[in-house]
Figure: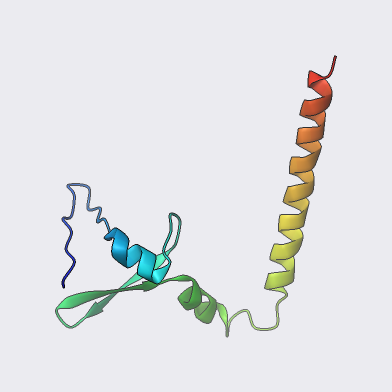
Length: 90
């Protein structure tokens, strides 16, 4: 059975729910569009992005930097919540 969709006036395309569920695609997932013959191939984009960085940024601690950045963001968020909570106390 084929799935179909209509392109909106803004160029937006809704991927049928059955296919999104099958591929595990949720809101915010990045996809890559590739021309293939007379058609269009849609693939998950995260792996492609990592492969594109492989040679140019080989050896850099990108994963560690990202983990540290996330940890610092979480700490900032916790401090903001603590300050907000203290401000609400009588």
